[in-house]
Image (tube, rainbow, N blue to C red; front, side, top):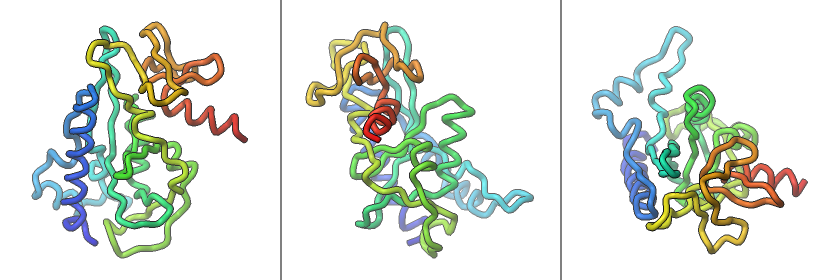
Length: 218
């Protein structure tokens, strides 16, 4: 399946991600390649630098989303991924992992992969948990990694709904691990004041909570 064939389902899922976030109190907007003209996309696909590397602009995240926390806003970027196979793995292009790492580590903007089974991975998890996939003639032809779906985190744990009558970070009541916290709290690891969960006596944001929980289970 080539890029043009994948574009339709991908754009539909990107729209679903934006719709779900807006419906649950987040502010979400299109981002990345979806804002570029078809001619621009085609030219980017033909580009390589002197080291025969493609432009990572091609793998920009698809959605930007905000959540108000008191007088501030928390921002995140999302690379929406459609699962084209029924295997037990997510397939993520290595260039997409590299791009999300740049946004997270160098542009200081948390970036996530969101799959159409409504699970989430961070670029760090993709890098650490992924293994090289076999050569494939489908897609863009670039290298990719396979990550077991067991590492996917439920969407609502990373992007919990925002109550209509409050601006403080609040977690879904359905998950007993989460708790309603005021804006004076922050993640014990990364200091983000968003989507906090309790683990023992400490507060963690979604990604840090998952890492701490896995570490405690080892």
